[in-house]
Image (cartoon, rainbow, N blue to C red; front, top):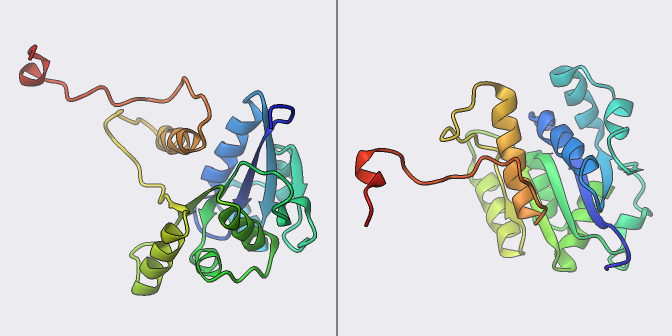
Length: 200
């Protein structure tokens, strides 16, 4: 694998939170040695316009390789094509259910199925609240298969001032899961305060 870039598949599906996928693509595009592969579902196209005033082509310009969701003959649909990881950002409950049950009816779910069967890293940024029992069982199934369930829940210890700050911190955590060097991440340094600052 040393003679090729690290291949990361990014899929955007129809849940709210399209900004996570867009920001992840921007970060991957700016990182040397990464080749990003993008899939955008039809529902995600609507969400991009609704939430970010972006067209499909605007987001496709951020990826190195673009695949159509109906193209089940794409390179990333086969385990023999070496891909290092996949992130679904955001991941709808429909996509989660399809992945959990091996229902590979489009390229997003087929590519995720391939990642799991090849024992590679799959990160699903699931978006829904509250969860019902079907959601929870599907998340358990994916976890048992080796996937990572990563709801994009904001942290506040780094004192975010804007929504963008919260999104960036979440993307930082995803970059960590992908094993990509990330110097700009806000790291936990321990509790502050007189009692905790005393030497042991």
